[in-house]
Length: 439
Image 1 (tube, helix red, strand yellow):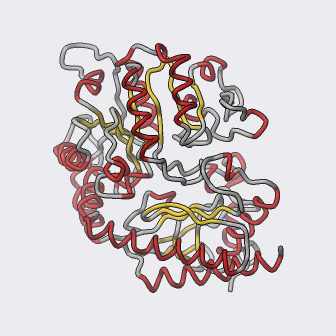
Image 2 (cartoon, rainbow, N blue to C red):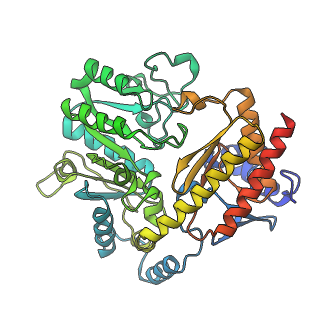
Image 3 (spheres, rainbow, N blue to C red):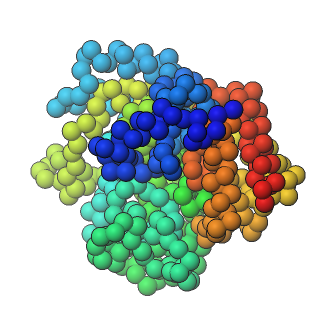
C-alpha cells in the first residue's frame, strides 16, 4: 500500500518544477495538498493513474464535473469527429443550438439559455442578469456557500464564528475585496426562513435576487428543505426580486437537476461542469422575459456578453454526448451507489462510536466529523479535532487508493459498479477504524 507523501517521488519532482514557474507551484487552489499534490497522468472509467504509476478510484471526478469518468466512448467519438473540422470559430455552430435544446428540454422552468466557459461565469452572468432586469444592486446569498471566483459570489464563503450573530456580517473571502462589494451582498444562514424574511423586510426594495445552491457543497452538502425553497420563492416574488439556482453541481442530482427534485421554478439557473462532457463550460438559463437582457437584436442589450471560446463546438459536442448518456436509468444507478455508500459509512461511524455523519443525495456525499445535528454551515464548521480527523481521513484514503476532496466531498461516476462501491466502502471503513483508534 502506498504511503503519502513518501511513495510519490515523481509527483514531488513535478511539484518542485511547478514551483519555479507558478506561485506556490499551483494554478488551482482547490487541488493544492501539503506538502505537494498528486499529479495525474491518465484516467479510464472510474480510475486515475498518477505520475508514480499508482491507480486510484476517482471519487472527486474533477470536482464533480466528470460524471461519466474517463474515456466514455460516445464523448470520445464526438470530440474526435469535431477536432479536424475546427475547435472554435468566430461564428456560431449548430452544436450550441442542439445542446441548448437538450438542456431547456430538461429544465421546465427555463425558456432560454446562454453559454459561458465556467460555472463561475454562469453564476456571474446570472447575478448580472438579475441586476439588469430589476435595476437593483443587492443580492442575498447563503452563508458558507461557494458559487465560483466572482467577488460578489465569494462573500462570506469562509465565514467564521466571530461574525455569525443572528444575521452574519458580510465578510471578504479574498484580500482587497472592495467595501462596495460587501455592501451589496446580504448573507443569511441556510434553511432559515425567518432570517430571509427579515432581510427582505429591511432591504427588499434594493434586492435584485436570492442566489442559492439547493445542496451547497462548501456549506456542508446539506439539502435545502422544500418548505424553505418555496418560502424563498414567494418572499422574493413578493418583493419583485428573482431567485437564482446555482446548479453547477446539483444538476447531477437528477434528470431535471435539483429544481426538478424539489419542484421549484427559479427565475434563473447557473449551470456548468457535467454539461460540458469534461471540457470547460458554463451557462445561465432563465425565463424568456429575464433572458431578454442579453438580446442584441434591437441594438445594445441591457447586458452585453461575449467570450472567445463560449459555445465552442468541441465542448458542445462533448456535452451533448454526456447529457444524452445521462438517462433516467443512469441517475437511478448513481443514486443506488450513493445510498449504498452513505448507509455504509453511517453504519461504520456508529459501529466505531466515532462522532460523524455522512450526508448528501444521489451521486454526492460528504463526511462530517461532528456529533451535533447537521443543519447548516455553522453546525459543520470544523474545530481543531474535526480538522485533524478530516485531514487524516483524506490522507488515509489516498494510502488506500481512493481520491476524494480534501474537505470531505465525494462525487461518483456512471462507470462505477456495486463491486467498485464495495471496495471504496472497505477503504473508507478501514480509514475510519484507524481514526477511531487514534482518538
